[in-house]
Image (tube, rainbow, N blue to C red):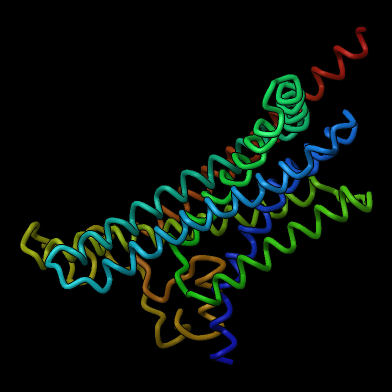
Length: 311
């Protein structure tokens, strides 16, 4: 059972890549459908070039981030541990901001996404470099989703092959959904899919907040060891405040099932005040903005319907 629990690191990677990958798949499907409608299917190869280019760019970004962390971890330089903790803290904060923004922005833009992509395809087809225009639309979409995924995975999950397999499974799942939707015309409730995935992603962002604060505390502790600052508060908590609980003897976050709760929900067998406050604040804020984006979307739909009835 303990060995099986090691695979829990693949679950967040699967969730994130499935959602991000499906967003990119939607753009790809819309572009292919637009090219077919315009009788320009000869440009389809540029779509595949764009997919490959975006994937390569995403892999390079993720590889550089992970290798940077590993290089600092293995370095014997005096300030390497401090730089490593700073990098991991920065990645965590960046991932929280990117994924939170993406979640809210994508919900608000969901109704206009198809129109915007079709307009971009039309503009590309009317240019002298239509192929490169199509390539750019796809490559940017794939790289954007890939960058967000790479930052998230590098920030929290560095379990090597396990994380990689989870990410690959998520991408395959996104591809299968795309084929079902665009090739076989099987009806998929896209709105429900993104609502469920959005709720899961909010919890994962909350877990990432706890991890980012842990690394932030690590920055302070290493700086204290180097004599750069003086952590006078607590031995293990320089900036996290008092400890709320120590459940390591009851539900360790290094063994099943605690490891599952840690991976998916952000559970820690050692939790501090600042982590608890940040977790609640992050989840509550993003949830409020997420729900509000649905309200804004509903209002836009009502206005659009009223205009159509008026005409």
